[in-house]
Length: 289
Length: 313
Image (cartoon, rainbow over all chains, first blue to last red; front, side):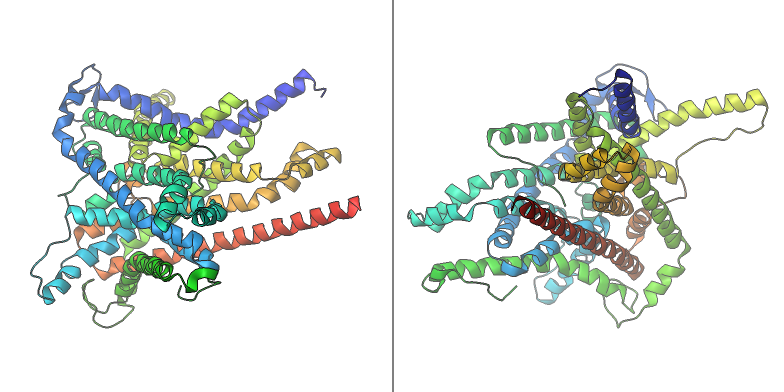
């Protein structure tokens, strides 16, 4: 291919210009602030809130005072992820192998709630779990007064409800791609249902399991709305601590330290995902659409 | 969900298999109820004639009227539409341009850009809220004295100050919706028929003309889907907006959130039902576009194969 130098340069400049707006957006609103966040986390606190230039580990040393928020988020994220997986896997399996002609419709019905307002979906449970909802029903049935709202149970329920679609979709994709002849082969070789599931289905759908786990775990770690509405200040996550530190008490250096720890937890999860993922074979790309 | 399609041959003798099958179906039915009953209840209570969300006392459109006549709710709704529309336009434009540029960048730059794109998508909203808040606070702290200096130098009176408002929410929403558009358009570009572009060049079309007449029509479904998704995400976001919103200009989710905190009334249900209608309508549009474009693509592929077959015979 004969191409003059000037033309090549023109093409390069055109490419750079096309990329420039998006790159600027990423740099200014994501990358630079992340660097500032690190700087802030070692800084001192100005009297009226905000940041005072300094270099101290005080913010990190103060983190244990918010340990409950981290521990809550971590346990709930782990528990929520496992529950989503346990509940979502049979559904994904059903959709991929047994749903027949209604498969597309049923799949769409799983995805639709995910695209509807998160706030509204959480609000829905506020009424159901509130005193006029299930508790009053249970009281009428003679179970006594049971509080459901503002408990860890309510938060966990909200998490499973909101994130289940995000888990089912990648599971479905990997189970649907699974070669059904392998299942027949396993059966023909005398393996029982459970053995086939454990030795064929599960290993071959591990990519979907992994994608689903990471897709669900990360956003739950950063969750704010569910604990705020269904936990009622009794069950709070790092997200709630961060909103408090940045918007209410305006302790930005301490908030930055907490945010850095949240980012580190997420990075760890992603690293584990990539490590485990690269050990298997095949593509792990799962689209959200 | 109940009828059976083509039973496996040995099913009749396999009684255990039938039980497993039934268990799967019961679990699926239960999950669909779990997913939809809460949403249905929200809509049901929006028609409540009574004063409280939990107790249904006859049906009426009363709370819809309350919602429509509530100036704060309608102001917030308008804000959300403005933010969503601008987010969709900017995110789609920048995202599409970037996706096109990424096809021609060196591999290393592309890898870095892709990594940042995935980070922007997967990072929790709370982190995006904090990051954009930090950027705006620092930017305004730098810009406003500059503006004051310039205004003082030319003696133009009181200098303007730039602060948070709807524009800062838009900028923050563009950050992650743009990333979604990039992924969608890049996926489409990867599946595109390159021979058409080459044919266009062979017929001496200019790059711009090739882009407008060949590339753009093929990208259209991805671009429209990207725009609608950007709008939906922006319209739905509470966390990011609560960080960078200006005083007195809440979005609808912000209004709903603070109303819930003040106490639940069926007005919230009425607003929720209206929002659900908007979202579901957008979803139907997206799915129709996708179905149409995949049908057209299939037809084109079939035609191309037929042509090729005719050519070889």
